[in-house]
Length: 181
Image (cartoon, rainbow, N blue to C red; front, side, top):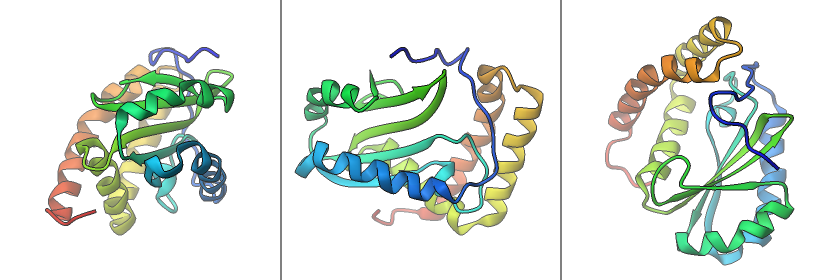
């Protein structure tokens, strides 16, 4: 299994699919025995976790683990399930597994220890968008606009989306404050 480079990755933006929540639950059931008691929680994050929001049809899974070093021992088991280990692909002190089909990303599995800032960021963003439909709509509208402009250039899509996303994350963090997760 070969993962597509970010620049050449195929992608689409689609309207919200009710099946995303069902897909997540099936994926979660698959991981419960794999991660066992090392998993503190397995959560649905990203745009597919926000009811009514369009996005890439990629299910983002966040697995909070007790010890990150333990996750590397799962690389072969995850490969048997169709996931490629990408290591610290997103941020340091995290692990990412990805499943693709025909060059299109279907599932991202983010593994972080409970107090990792990236884990907190993903959870807070999801909660913010779930609680602020106007923000979710503005973000969705931007994604649709950028996909219309760059349907074959994921790198350009991300490059133009990231500044907005950075500001959105700042609003979400401010809204959440220092509340525990």
